[in-house]
Length: 434
Image (tube, rainbow, N blue to C red):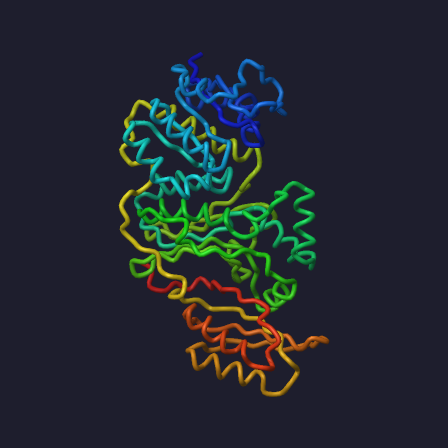
């Protein structure tokens, strides 16, 4: 049997999944790519003890030189995460003429163009299907299957942890911190959940998807980012009453030649396909000018789903390795479109206030909104507490900068106790997309 030898960096959750899937599905892999994929060396930290079975000590190494200087290893899989030393190791592997597979979304979001250029110049492949949405195939469809389309919009649930938290909050009427603790206990959330709950993870993934979809290098710093820590059971209750569901979405659109790039909690209609994506599942909604609407759905994380995507990249490289890459691994190097400042983006908005129970408050707020070209679509005012009365507005489309200016003025009204939350609303109505 013909064999392809690979070097594996990292034997944690995903690395262990790769080891298991290669053993579990050996016959299927051979049938589909014509080779047995053999892990020759595994880079681990000193003192590391494998949790998967069947890994002999002679396969483990603490020195990357044992992988990069081994001429028999043709493909290197990077699963150690982080920026350094992952970036250094990948560049060294590329310089040594080895193809690279990575699941490192943070690295690709910040250094993807650099790594892609290096791979292109070296005549090797850089593959990264597992970097977005785990086992859900989205990278290769954007690079290949949808290549005849002009992508107009990408909108997705890109982080399983936050989707799990919002699902539990919605279905069980519990607060954010209670569900976060439960998610940490179950292993869905890290001990430090900042990357997930503050939207960094989703923003990294949206950066990669946008770079592929719109044919221009997108900078991570240009993606507007908000997390879910301010979502309150009251917001979920009002969303339900108004016919919406709250999801943390990554949204990328091309409008009038500029890109909208944002990650934030969003009201979406209950009948939107993404509204039914619950628990730790991911989904990416794509609109192409020829194909129309598509949705990719599945497990966004976990050992075996992510390992499936990693190994699919290895198999694809095996099939194509004799062909010199001529499409720059999906990345574009020269900017052709610019990111629109967040203040210029137009949206509908959900705004929740707590106000004093005094006649005329609603009129004062509505008047101030009108002075900044913000008109109201609906208003809910019901119930009261010791603190005051909750007052909820849904606006018509308004410019983000106008909303922020109006809220600064409203916040100075004596009768306004607090601005409880501001959440953008996506109703699926497109504006000037090309």
